[in-house]
Image 1 (tube, rainbow, N blue to C red):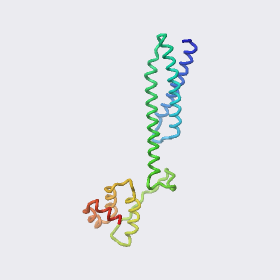
Image 2 (tube, one colour):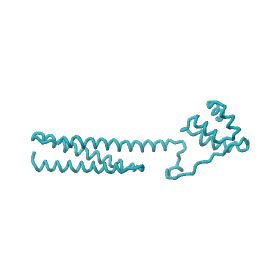
Image 3 (cartoon, rainbow, N blue to C red):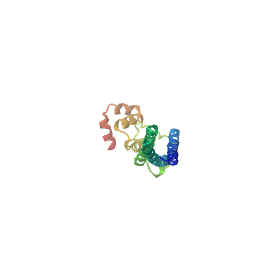
Image 4 (cartoon, helix red, strand yellow):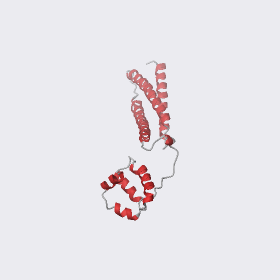
Length: 187
């Protein structure tokens, strides 16, 4: 292989490796705050860098092998780094997409909750003290936040219910089978 062509290929390979290494440094600095757009841009960039690297490496291997030179070290290290980074970044993108999807499917998501940085204080459930005049307020709140919450199973609903009723009601409810309580509340 012509010396000038060989130097050009080695320089191009070095540029591709530098891009991959730069993206590795970015991935290593990722903490809990994931900027999905930065990851997607770099995921595309690493694919392009890999394609460039692979083309150059193939040419170097084919032409230099005939002359007895070897590029095996590069062929072992760089692909492993690329595959690791590609998998890590793809996984991060997938994780963010799944979280975003679950937020949009959440029964409580609406346009008023578009700002996910907003932290509301926890809702304090009224304790039902067996007073008929307080039952409607208690039941509406409990129904809205617990019974209609599709992410909770009946056991979780049961323990929420036990936590917001008076001692007398607690003693009655804890002796009923869980399967009998929720059909009654639904009526």
